[in-house]
Image 1 (cartoon, rainbow, N blue to C red):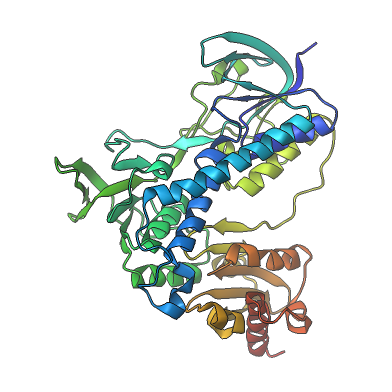
Image 2: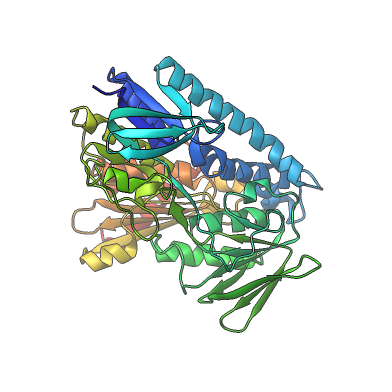
Length: 463
């Protein structure tokens, strides 16, 4: 009756996982990707490029060794944009090759072109050459992702004023950078460039930022940023941005302050890339940011055979959760009931230093009225921290004093996104403080911080 059992629009984390899962169930699958190569925003302008850039910066700048050798220490004295791009291109080529091979061995077909609904079951695909064809599918997954929000008052020019997709191809390294938007993307890039000793000013119209992270961790993070001479302009809306003839960029804030820099990154939000999908023909609507509403349990839209997953449905907009959403959508489409998702998943922010969290924040525990105690460990208290030359890094653990159960783990510092998984496992298995006190951890490791923080909380809990 239809050309395909599942048609996936977009080949990012949710799209690729849905396509492969559908294929493994013996279904015919077509993935439509408008980019030059498969992978979507995650591979080409988002997750992989930004994390590769971060790793390159930390390696070439000698950032991790400065605790021993001083702030002026560098592995490479003159780091240029070319140094950053070389590793990036190699990584992206590898990611695309892996994905193409995964599609090939699972007999997932791909079509390069722009997808557009002409009915709930029919999609028109327009190739770069202008050639058009129409295909039909029993089920459709919209996994088109997002693109940067680009307001009219920002003079984007591809040379000194960038959005978060363009910044990975910057022509040269600036001596100063203004970042507008202290969300996850803005904070990551602000700290990455700061690690290169670029003078960074971070502007956020709200008085707080990253509000879903435990406040104590954010306070610690802000202290580190200020110590590195990152200028924070919180609670200051942007009135205008002007580029002078000499190329200098002046950002005028609502409180009257001026911020001058060589380059500017506008990272204040993203919008769903849904405007060219002709969703009306499918019977679908989007919100003011182009996002699609779905049933969180099944990922179905208002039209039952059409699903949506990934960044296009909004928070948490993580590659990890997007992959799982794609798998759940595919399983539901073909009558399989996937197991319920775990109660807690890890959230990782690849700033410098990293932030990772799982479970309840202290603010959430208080709001729920749960009696609790907190344990703190600092990385400099561990032998591995000394060996690595770490002067900073903190782990915060929250326990119920009534049940002794772990309620949340919050980490700021080197390796936070790796360390968090121990806490995630204990949380989802409903473990208690006793696990951390009685267990043996490799020595010397940063994971020892779990035992230190556990003992710290235990000492306060009156046993």
